[in-house]
Amino acid sequence: MAKDKTSDKGKSKGKKAKKLSKEDQVKLAAARAIVEEKRAEMAKAPKKASPGDFAKALRAGPGFVLADIDTSSTPGFSGDRALGESLMPDLAAAVSDLQERLYAESKEGGKRAVLLIIQGMDTSGKGGIMRHVVGAADPQGVQITSFKSPTAEERAHPFLWRIRNALPKPGIIGVFDRSHYEDVLIVRVHNLVPRAQWARRYAQINAFEKKAVADQITVVKVMLHISKDEQKARLGARLDNPEKYWKYNPGDIDERAKWDDYMAAYQVAIDKCSTDVAPWYVVPADKKWYARLAVMNLLVATLRGLDPQWPPADFDVAAEQARLKES
Image (cartoon, rainbow, N blue to C red; front, side, top):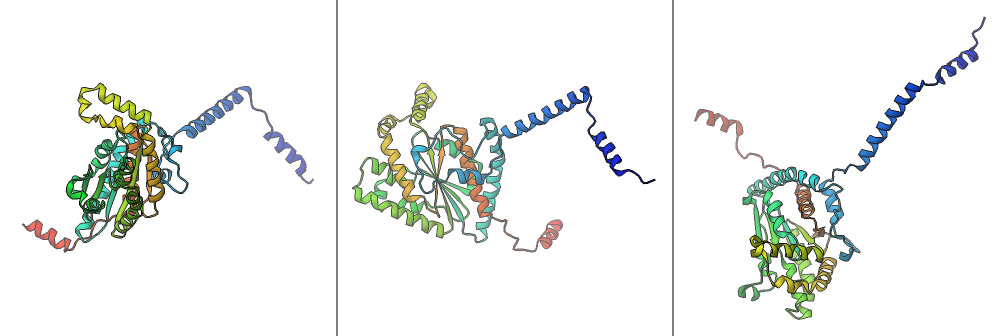
């Protein structure tokens, strides 16, 4: 007699449709709850940001509006201070390694260098960048230049003369603490030269930076952007601490009165001078830990983009090893 396949299918379906016991239902519900909880935790967990994420989030492109930036925000990074600070040692190690490669490359004829320009209002954290970011590199491969009011000799030359003299040599990471942009910032705000004179400088700056890039100097321009309220708090902290009096300058209060003028001057400088070859990066700096993390990532991204390599030996390694063994 032929086997009834229809009957077998019905039996199979019946087995699959068997109901779980109450105990198994409770266990299944508990397991599902655990899975959903883990999914929620993963969704909330900060994603590990890459140096490229910071560069993309902070670059000032077409239509950039400085006034729209939340100076307490953390673009490109969703973690907190503890996570941000925990990432710094590995980033510092990357900077140290890549900078040494760049320096070694120059000893074998390489021409490449990096210029990191740091601008910002007083108390914006430039000193912290020098200590916590630039300090990660070997001092022999770093050149820091702090630009103050020009000397009599410097005033006797075009405004870019002293800047050109400070450009980094091959293999060096040059760092400008303030820069040629002071000549379209403070000079503009205080009317130190005729308008027609400083108005020409934007094009001169662009030409200068384009030439530097053509000479294999990668230019990274950073504005540390703090709020007026945050600056007030930092100035107050200096006045409250005798150990910080040396950092306080009464002139900072006078400059605060021109805050809006400075913001307008920065906006124009960024509009006119954030170019494809030398873009501006605007870093919200009310959170010092974030500003340092952001600039460190920008430096790492730049050095990784250059991808400097250790130069090969120009001698017979095996022969030298043999000679050393016998010496």
